[in-house]
Length: 95
Image (cartoon, rainbow, N blue to C red; front, top):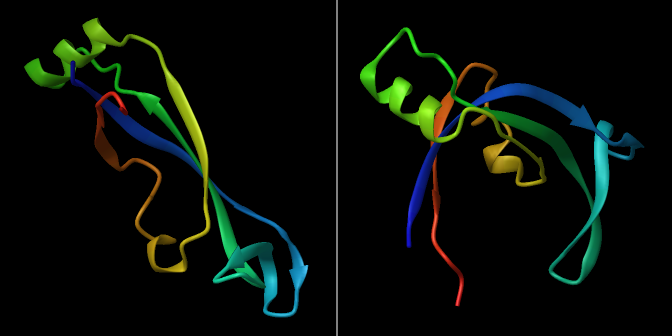
């Protein structure tokens, strides 16, 4: 069973403390060593806009409500998630 959902980024918040590399970093273990890394909290909610497209109406009927929050510590991806951006989320059972 595979399920696809459509979510929009509703919040991007910088997280952390004042560290050696400046504000908004957090401790993380990478390669077995503790390091300061930028952290962002990303919040996404299910698309619920019946007025724009048939696709959005379909997703709104299937998932009228939902949210997801995660922390992102990958510096290379820190600017990829912007408020208002929309993504497909594919759910596949893990074995």
